[in-house]
Length: 321
Length: 244
Ligand SMILES: Nc1ncnc2c1ncn2[C@@H]1O[C@H](COP(=O)(O)OP(=O)(O)O)[C@@H](O)[C@H]1O
Ligand SMILES: [Mg+2]
Image 1: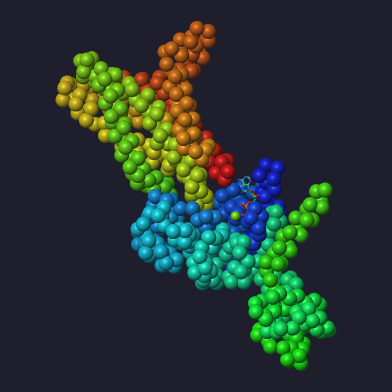
Image 2: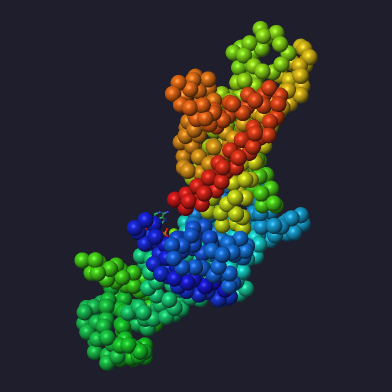
């Protein structure tokens, strides 16, 4: 439903978005990841028709944002970064204004506004000026505005930024609920969000796509992927235990970290493509270690993220010099 | 059309959402009173007309209209709501027209509140009410011209104070170009055709013409095309500057 074709945006001599192409289908939730200044917001602004691309095009349900901006904007619900809304209006007035602009009148408008209010739990504040609302409620007003017309395409720029953990959870639940009938793009720099809501992730840095795949593929890139996390209660020397773990034929490397009184945590990374859980388990049993925890790790996303995004800037540095 | 109406209503309500609107109307009325009765010598003239009242309108508008128009776009840009507005299914022209019309409607409301002066002059004497009506009409057209300038300038900046100052300066130019002193200056060296061109650019020239009670097509065309040109520029400026 969303087809991004070679989108590029220059601000003067500076290239903020560099030749980005991707596709989002109905039912997909695309996580748009990247460090600050990566070009996430700029890309979203081009998709939603707020700024014109220097090159390339965004097609929504087959229609180009450049050729048919109005018709495309009707199909999109957009939550801009920071959820801007008119501060002097109440959520009730504001949502009715949005409904009117989107062409709903009379009872139809009331139904749309009420549904949106219910979906994001705004009931308690609908008659207070938006200016006086907390950050969490302001964000919900923005969300309500974006989903009011039940759009096929939903584009949200950092919808959970600055919310407390409960509010984050609510927003993620809401996104998951809506995922089935829509194509959704969510930008974030919070990695846990990827596994929580996204069916696919794209990582961009300095305007370029560096990774495009499922969250599982992303964690598979971690050196901790399938590593065994072992927590032992022991008075023994950590290095001695580490040496024993290293003798396992499937282990590629072992790290340890103190984890409290007589507690030591070990990370045993396996060689590529093999499982090491059983080996570690047997070794622990034969040595009579007191095992407090033993499990296989998914992989550490922040490690992968750092890896992907910093290696690109190194590469760029080399090119420049 | 619905979209224009929706934005128009939101904008107009926005004026009255804060005390600023009421303060503005009071200031407007007090100033018209001062200008008319003290500076204009309304009683001393001993004539039953509203000339002293209308004569000061260009000067009143010079400062009051940019105060109305300064927030139109600068505020949206500052608050970031322009991103919301311009990603709704509306064209830039619709947004520009709706905002302009709302500001114009607000000005008409302020102008309508001057009706006690009209009642006074009818109570005191026997004025030509047709002339008064055309003068009101001319004043409103002139207000539209001021507003179109102000709206366009408001889109160039996020800062309302800057929008105000620049709009005052530009509008001052369009008043001055019809001022006898300025025209005399041009007459001393420039051919008549240039003097006429400068003079015909002025609000004053066209407003005084209408104020005499004659609605000439040329004056209507002047104000209509003046507003049209500035709003056209406004659309271009919004498209250029909205994302900065
Ligand atoms: N209007 C603009 N003018 C100049 N540079 C801009 C503009 N908007 C964004 N940029 C630059 O483009 C880069 C990408 O910004 P942005 O898309 O907001 O990043 P992200 O949302 O990923 O944090 C940044 O370096 C930013 O400074
Ligand atoms: Mg951003």
